[in-house]
Image (cartoon, rainbow, N blue to C red; front, side):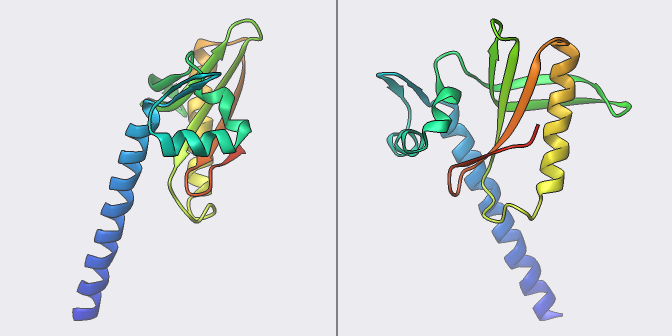
Length: 148
């Protein structure tokens, strides 16, 4: 019994730490802009973004953060928030990122794929003739995985 309680408390503490870390990172990332010589936000995050050039297009001034989206998908109404969104009306392309703080990329990958597919479906209902690309940005190593 004591071991079960200890395990429960340890898991709760670890989950709270992970949630708190994720919330803090999301808040910091909302404020980041790296657009040519214009930079705003946390200097360590900007440094990481600049070290991974493939991330730079997602952090331009025109990128939107914490974008609310809602609609019907899979037979029910959902309301979600997209971490970072870029709409290019010239190329009719939408790119979006969802941030993840997990260190084990495989632990919840199926849930994350479902989440991003849901985002893509909701976006497609509003932008029917746009190509939609969805990515996970793994914040522990700053890698970007294309999901959609």
